[in-house]
Structure formats: C-alpha cells, structure tokens
Amino acid sequence: MTYEKDRQNQNADAREKKIDLSLLKYFWQAGPLNFSKQDSIPRFLRKIKVLKNFSDGELFILSKYLNERNFRRGELIFQQGDVGIGFYLIFSGQVEISIDDNKFDIDENIAKGRYSLNLERYDFFGELALLQENAIRNATATAKDDCILFGIFKPDLDDLILQYPVVAARLLQSVSMIIANRLSFLTQEVRFLKSKLEDRESNK
Amino acid sequence: MSSIAKNKEIFRFAYFASILSLCLLGLTLLPRISIPLSLSYVCYLMAAPLLPFFTRIFHNRNVAIVFLLIVFTVVALIPLFYLLPSLRSEIERVQYYLPKLEGLIQSKFFEIKLLVQNKFAITIEDIYFQDTMAKIKSFSAKLLWNLPSFLANTLEWAFLVPLFLFFLMKDSTSFTRLLLKITPNSIFERFYHILHELNTKIGDYIFAKFVEASIVGGIITIGLLILGVRFWVLLGILAGITNVVPYIGPILGAIPALIIVYFDNGLGSSFGGVLMLYLIANIIDIAIVFPVMISKIVDLHPIVVVISVILGSQFFGFVGMIVSIPIAAAVKLIALEFYKKIYSPL
Image 1 (cartoon, each protein chain N blue to C red):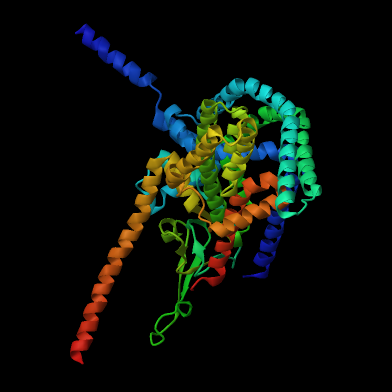
Image 2 (image 1 turned 120 degrees about the vertical axis):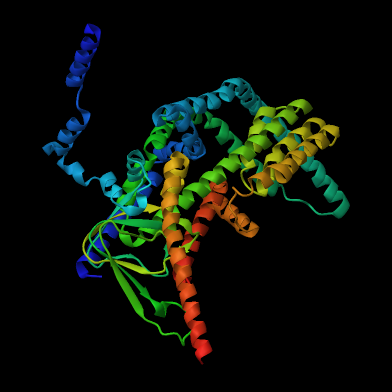
C-alpha cells in the first residue's frame, strides 16, 4: 500500500513539476514582443481555404518561396492576353478581375460584354498560369486599393519541386483541387445549358 | 492607371534599369573581377542541379555546398597535378620546335613555288607566305610570353573562383529575390520568366558542352598517346577546347596535330592514323554524344549558329566563338518573348 501511495504522490509531484507547454505557448504568443508575428505570412496562409492540406512546417517552407508584390491603387497586375507565369494570393487590399469579351475573336453574333468581380484578403487568382505552358491570361487584374499580394511563380515551383518535393506536391494538389472543382462546376453548367438548348429546339 | 501609380512605376523602372546597367558596366570595365565571376558562374550552373540532391542527403544546405566545393576543387586539382609537369615540358619543347617547323614550312613553300613556276610559269608572291608566317609567329610568341602572367592570373582565380562559387551557391536565391524585389510591376512576370529560362538554358548548354568537350578531348588525348604523337597533352586539351565551337571547332583542333605529324613523318601511315583518330572522335561526338545531349543543346538553326560564331570571332576572337552560341540563344529567347507580347492573338 505504501508503495502505491508513494507512486501516486510521485505522479502528483511530477504533474506539478511538469512545465505546462501549452500555457507557456499561450503566454509567448500573447506577449507584446510577439505582436508583429500575429500577421506573419504562414499565419496568413493558414487562413486560406485551398491550402488547408498543408502542415504548419510546410506552410513555413512555402512562405519562403512567395514573392511579395506591392501595387498602388489602379495599377495593373496583369492584362488579359498577356503571357502569365504566376499565382497570386491577396494579403491586403482589393483586386478587381475583369473580362472583356471584345478581346476574344469569337462569333460576332454572340452578345459581348464586360464582366468583373472583386477579390479580397485570403482570395487568390491566376492559378491556371502555374500549370499551363505559355499560359495566356483570361482576364485583367487591377488593384482597387493599395494592395500587397504574394505571388508564387513557375520558376519558384520548379525550385520547390527540386528542393522540397512534398511541399510542391501539396501546392500542386491544392491548385488541381481548385481546377477540378471548377471543371466539375463547368461540366454541370454545360449539361444544364445543353438541356435548355434542347428544350428550346424541341419547342420550336 | 492613376497618375501617382504611373509616376511611381516610372521611378521604379528608372531605378531598376540604372542598377542593372551599373552592374553590367562594372562587369565589362573590371575584367579582373568579371572573368573569375563568370568562371564561377559557369561552375555554379554545373553544380546547381546537384545541390538539392546533396541537401537531401546531408539535411543541411551549407554542408552540401561545402561538400560540393571540396569535390569540385579535388576534381579540378587532380588533372592539374598530373598534367602540369608534362604540360610545362611540352610548352618548353614547343619553343624549340616552332622555329624548326617554320624552316620546314618555308622549304616546302619554296618547293611548291618552284613546281608551280616550272609547270604553269606563274610566280607566287612571297609576301602572302611571309605575312601569314609573321602573324603565326607573333601569335605563338605572344602566347608563350603571356604564359607567366597567365599562370599568375590562374593563381588569383584559384583563390577567387571557389570563394565566388561558395557565395553563389549559398546566396544565389537571395540575390535573385533582391533583384526581383526591385523589378517594376509592369515587367515583373516577363522578366522573371526570361531570367529563369536563361539560367536553365545556358546552364544546360554549358553542362552539355562540358561533357562533350571532355569526352572528345579524352578520346583524342588517349589516341595521340597510343599513336606516339608528340605534344599529346597539349593537342588533346586543344581539341577539347576547340570542340566547343560548332562546325569549325573540330577542324581547328585537328590542324595543328596534322601539321606536326606531317612534318615529323610525312604523308605516311601515322598521318592517316591521326586523321582517322580525329574523324573517329568526331563521329563518336556526332553519333553518340550529340543525340544524348540534343535536348540540352539550344535549338538554333545551323545558319544562325555559323553566323553567330563568325560574328563572335570578329568582335571577341576565340573567346567570342565559344560564348557566341549561348549569347545567340539568349537573344533568341528575349526576341521570342517580345514577339509573343507584340503578336499575341488576344
């Protein structure tokens, strides 16, 4: 009995003596010296949905391969028809993506227009350029405010594949996930439009 | 684009252009720095593909860099230690051999002159012959005179090249980052793309040419040693170096060996042997080495290759002939990039 009691006491002692790591971590992160790190790149990347399959260490490696680009309000990021090599994440500010149908040489009978949409912090754009050879930009991106973007470009991806193949595979997985989602959405859309067209033809 | 953004972009552009041109100007004005720097850059391009592999083995980039540096130094030093004594004795022998060769060529020339005079009643002027001989003599004398200063330079490079190479391997990514940071937004993607393409293309080209030259040089050195031709080390090295120049190079490399064999033994079996050796080495180069490396060697039209080699030799001599192809490839790449921008279908 005494032995078991001793054991229990020892365990209790050990529990008291053990450093509470999570508590320390909390104080460390809440400390005033650590304030600037609240907005660090890996933390920012953590909040991007498509990068959720990355571990913290992998995000840290990825963050070293990102290029910070600053754009003034109204400045062009890239133009429709340009050759593109990069994928951008919005760190701060707003970006307007606009498509001008007049730039495409499609059938003149089809109605043409100009479409635009706004992207904000944690959004991303230009992911197709990372995968395509000689990718042509499908839309124009313009900075709506002063913005900070993080870009990852084809040469960075090439380096990443050589140096950290796992991180590169994760990144490619994320980008292909975006594209796969878009493709399945487009397939549904095409199917829907086809059925509508068939309806109209049969009604005629 | 708002006017403030536009102004800022113009300032960025001016800053970027001035820094780039300052660097280029510094490199062209200071050959004592730019030559070892470009040598170490060539070494860096050859070592860079191995770096990730060794980084994975050692789990530390710096250890991998130091390891690669030691390997490079040892690989560069072994042939130097083995070849330097025989190279020196050969160069010394060349000094005595050249006047003899000149006398022989002179006597041959007069024989031919007499023959032509007797058969066709035409006199060949001596001036052409003397001009060429004087040129060759002054060239070879210059080569021998400059040898000590060349060796001194080599010592300086032997210290500088590994130093530059170490920092190129260690910090090349941060240099590139720095350069990219000051690149103006309007040309950023294009500039980064061209920079990357140039690096990989020129690196591949240098690697392929290095392998090709060492294979051809090795075959010829061993062959000449077996055939018992004098100056086999010098001629083998020369064949390796001239092989870098396309089309004309192999011929340029073969001429001195053929002349030496001709004046030593005449048009006999050994002349045929040497001719066969150079032919076989080049056939191996064209039939085996070239197809394996073809994907790495830049795709330029043969006429473009010849023209750029001629232009290179016109402006920068032999060095121009060697560097003309990568420069032509770079120009083609940049021109293509602009073409894509200007003539894009959208």
